[in-house]
Image (tube, rainbow, N blue to C red; front, side, top):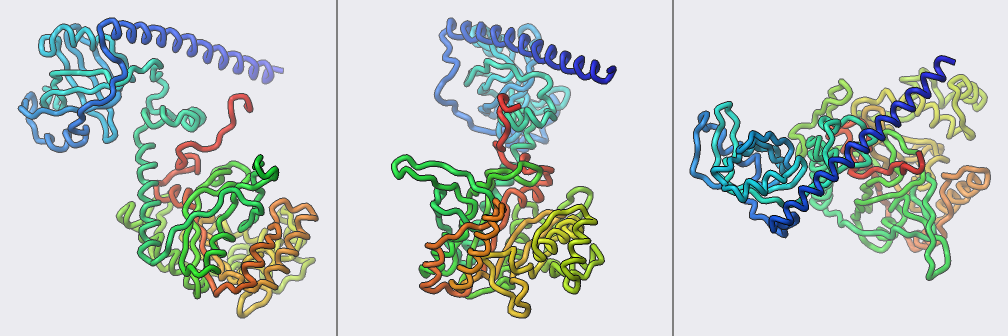
Length: 510
């Protein structure tokens, strides 16, 4: 009873606090609107068109780092950014502007800028975007600053940046209001800048190897290329349902059939799946395909590509992640799925009967149907989390890989690998199946699984089988989760930390 009462008290206090903060914000907004109207009465446009920005904060701080205390220069600079601090002292004030590169202090005096400009400035608020022009100097306390000769309002902020946003930790607010997260936590912006570098270097690497970037349809009459539930949409002019792409694979293979020998796609996939630390229904994927090679060549391509990206982005192949030093330097460890299970679970699944496998599945409190599914479940349960350093797990059971070539030495396996880092799948690759008759059989097996309730089983794509019947060359394919690679190279905890606008529940859903 006491616990229940305490629970309702907490809810009441949270709601009261929220209402109090909303009331406070409304009062501040009213005050800011008054300041906005004051500026308009002073014939000031609170939302001008341009500002002549000559320098960024970091440029000034670096260039004048050797200035002595209280030393002034004659150098004129103009910087622009958001006012993050403001300390009024009657007829003078100190403040900090934050731009794309960092923060810089400014100092303004009424007797220096004149009464008219200073009266305009007194209507500025924290969060306003402003431009200041003046000379560079170092204060007596040792901070390189701009001695203001002119200040302009560039955008009036009507909503305050509450104190709680300083060092913002509330992930719910951070992800929903990413703009505030970036303003108050500038390191977040650096993550997205590094993400852009990672994507650029991935493209650069593939381009340098002769791959051609291509586009594929997002709206597809038959989805495929992965085991996943799709998003369904409707095209009115055709009066039929289409699916958002879950993978570019089958379209990229069509291009290989058409005579392009090296192709890649880098963009969004959409899978109607759970949201967790490593999954978001809308995510970024790179997939590439190369004719006349197998998964061994693709393995080398994978480790070389990621090593290249690491060096370009971080200057080293090593990162510190969850107290582990992870080294992406090639070559990476290679181990078969059976070997991994034997190493980490002490089970020789190749020699075990179906009954023995079912017993192990039951003991581990797992669920699986076929023999191949049980082996895969045991690997995921016992081995996956132990793969900290970059590791290629090779040679998967046949029936869980409907698009993969049969292993040349063991017909019960396929030539597939997945790359794991810190217990997380980073890449997936095959020696691609190019036998149209076998592909049709595999699709039929998947269709049977769908009829038995497997929502993620691969549907039959008859047009793709027809394309294969014209002849598809031997081919190696690779898919890399871009978001997951960014997680590691920026040392973040969640996929939501590396996607600027992750999918979130609306307030109505909560």
